Amino acid sequence: MSATVPARRRALVEYLREIGVIDERVLSAMAAVPREAFVPQTFRHQAYDDYPLEIGEGQTISQPSVVARITELAEVGARDRVLEIGAGSGYQAAVLAQLARFVFTVERLPRLAEGARTRLAELGYRNVSVQVMDGTLGWRAQAPFDVIIVSAAAPAIPRALVEQLTEGGRLIIPIGELRRQELVRVVRRGESYEESRHGSATFVPLVGREGF
Image 1 (cartoon, rainbow, N blue to C red):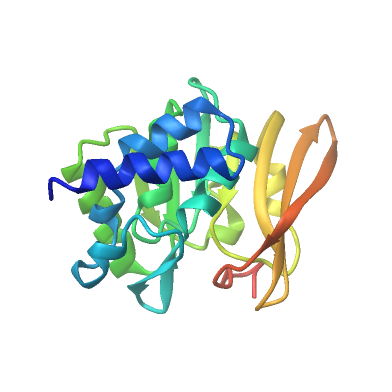
Image 2: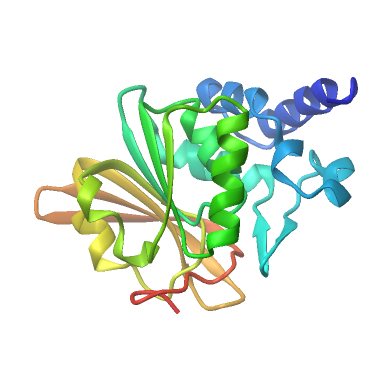
C-alpha cells in the first residue's frame, strides 16, 4: 500500500463528515476499508475521489459518499445479519462487515463474485459469504435479515426482499428509471411496511426476475 493511502482515506472520512455523515460507526468503517483494493489497478490513484469507478462487466463501484449514505440509512447493528444485493467488487460488503455480525452478498456475474470473494478473503474478512444468484429473489435459505441493501436500481421494490426482513428490519434500495432513481428506505412493521425517500441516486440496473 502506498504511504499516501492512509492520509487520503482519512481525508475522505473528513469530507464525508463535512457533507453530513454523522454516524461515527459508519465513518470508522469507511476509514478501515482500503478502497484501493476494490478497484482495478488502472484506477487506484482515483480510489479516494468521490465518484464511481468502472470495475468491469459493465458494473461500477459506488462513490464513497453514496456508500456512506446508504450504510448510515441502514443503521447496521453489531449483531445484525445483513444481505447485500449486488456484490460488485466487494467494497460495500467490506464496509458492512465492519459493522455487522455477518454479511451475505449476492452477485449475478460469476467473474465479479469470484473476484469479490477472493479479495475479501485476502483482506481477512471472515464474516462475509459471497454467492452467485438472482439477487432480486433475495437469499431465502439464509433469511430473515435485519438489513438488506441493494446496490443496483430497481423499477419497484421486489416483494421477495421485503418478505425476508425481520421485524423492524431495514431495506435500502434505489427505485426509479434506468438513468435516475431515488433512495428508498423500507422498515418492516409486522405485516406492513413504512417507506421513506432519501434523495436522488444513479445506479446500474438490478437485473433479475423482479428487476429490469
